[in-house]
Amino acid sequence: MIQAITREEILNGLGQDYYCCMFGISKHAYKCNMWREIFDQVGGVGFLARDKEKVIGQMIFLPKKYARKIALPTSPNNKDIDTTMVIGCLYVLKEYSNQGIASEMITTLINFCRKCGYERVEACIDPRPPQEAGINISFYPFRKFGFVIDNSGEGWEFKPQTKICCLSLKDEG
Image 1 (cartoon, rainbow, N blue to C red):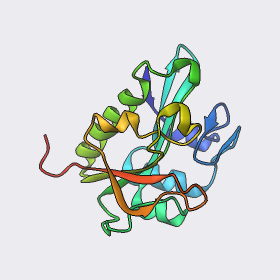
Image 2 (image 1 turned 135 degrees about the vertical axis):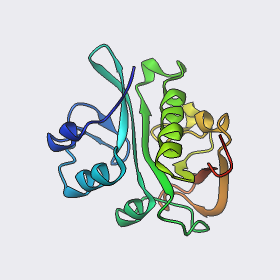
Image 3 (image 1 turned 90 degrees about the horizontal axis):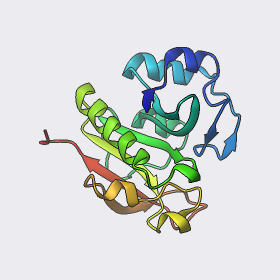
Image 4 (image 1 turned 90 degrees about the vertical axis):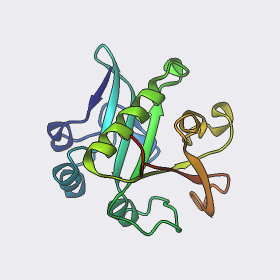
């Protein structure tokens, strides 16, 4: 089941009970004011996938203007920071992979972005197959939604295999 991360979870320390690929560590609490500010402005910061009470996956997203503030990779060609949403983390526990959980979170985000007036979604991905991408976000779940790799720049400069992928939501349903 996919659920939106609540403001209360942010206030109580988002990320304490599950792994976050955004920062590559577990049990990290996100108690800084930025996450509350994003939630209040946008109406959300991410989704959790649960199997009963167990968190089995997560997606963290934020507007491009905030992604740039914390140095997340974004497309250098896209200057529109007001209508671009950036996926900072997409993670599903290995034992739950290949069950459509990442796809369900991507679908939920696309619907959220359309509803909130965002025109583009970006993510830093690894174009290699999931088993080779390791902790990096694999491009595989994004392909079926029409995301394309933006070759205008690299993703993480310390991980040269990473790239930015993007999806335009303009002129779509």
